[in-house]
Image (cartoon, rainbow, N blue to C red; front, side, top):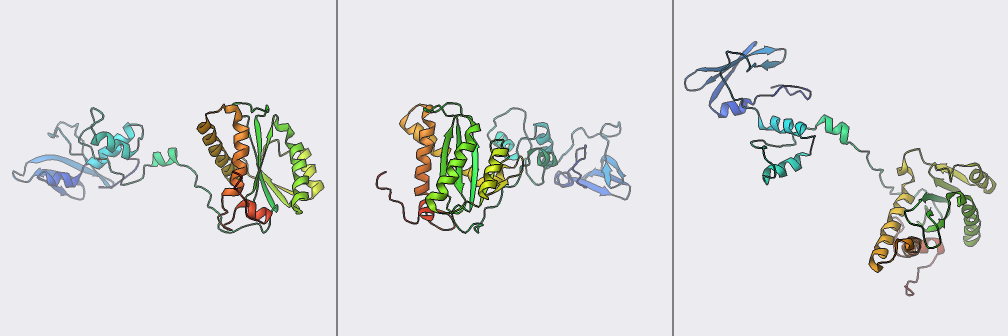
Length: 304
């Protein structure tokens, strides 16, 4: 039989007809199915282009039950049941969790074009195996998240996260208004360049209004810093700091849950998580902690 994805008719299984004791005789313009013992004609069909068609609604067809292939019925039920996955449909059938679903075999032997169009997701960005920077502060990744559901003890509801690309060292700053991003960024750049005696070459952020504005651009121009932006609606391009946000969130939630404190302590929890992650996580390429890569010595965590 010819398999067509958009075919609106049911397909007959020739193998099932033969297994049930029928003979199938195909010619260039027709098909005839007879019983193997008595040679009685069960039904006839005609050829239309590349398909053999049988009209069971006609008066001369004396077959009341069609032997549809179980695989075809599985895909038919897949479409009827709102394109639920084959694995779940098999589970319903195996454990008899619903009524009215019998004698069907669910096999994922092809790709459902409707599921492909409706459920497809973008491929994840491949992780980098080589470094694009050669020293600390050569490239800084920035992101601002908020407003949070609860204000912190200090009345803040935003958090600015800055990650160094080379060492993965992280700084966090808390704001009560994202308009204060410029002031905090200006003080941070001056302090970090003086503290580590290194110049910041590039910064990378999304297209948020707190970063893409005249004041920040003038600050970068005055300091000779190149400001890079990720594409719109593509947070994966700023994925390093986005993933750092997730790490800080998970650590902070764990600490808040363990000590059963109010959610308004989220800023203190994130600050603690940032301090710990700088000294405990290892860089996947350099196999050293961010603190050692930036400061030049191994961190002492005995005071923890």
